[in-house]
Length: 228
Image 1 (tube, rainbow, N blue to C red):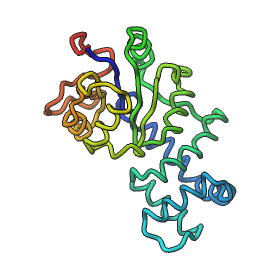
Image 2 (cartoon, one colour):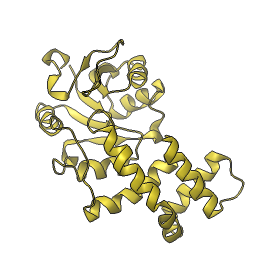
Image 3 (cartoon, one colour):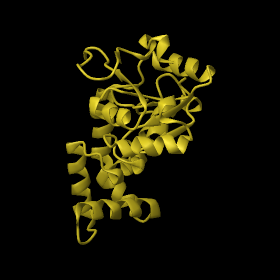
């Protein structure tokens, strides 16, 4: 019996192109001005110092940290300080209506159906929790945040580390086997499976299901009933 579903975002609920072609460029362009105008805020200061610490910088020179963060954006580095700062910048874009969070057409209806069937829903993404809430709160399908019971980001651990999924199961107070993890990335699914979670790969067209140890579907509506 599946008691909870934990879903990835990029490539699973939402297109990779929205993140790479809309969100990343938006944050990269606005990052320097954001750091300059918000550097006195405690939360921003914290993440700037964390970025410098992670990079091994001796001092926190503003331009040096800006250059570092923009390089990390170009590398798509899964660094928690970067993801936190990106989320703060994206908030301005969502709230101004410059863009809305992309979700595939099947997502909203399936989330609703699962929730109505008593399944608790969670998100686990490399993007910060705040960024996750922004995407689903300002999605093309409306505010989807009421569907979710909680969110996880890389502060709980890396997505390809089995220990991260064990910690998620512990925080949900559920046996790992009662949790279904949805993702498009085989290595993430491998880690979740190692931790004892049930897994299902989502290969959105034009991607095809890879050869792996995980059952695979093309979208949420194609998930067979026997999974639950």
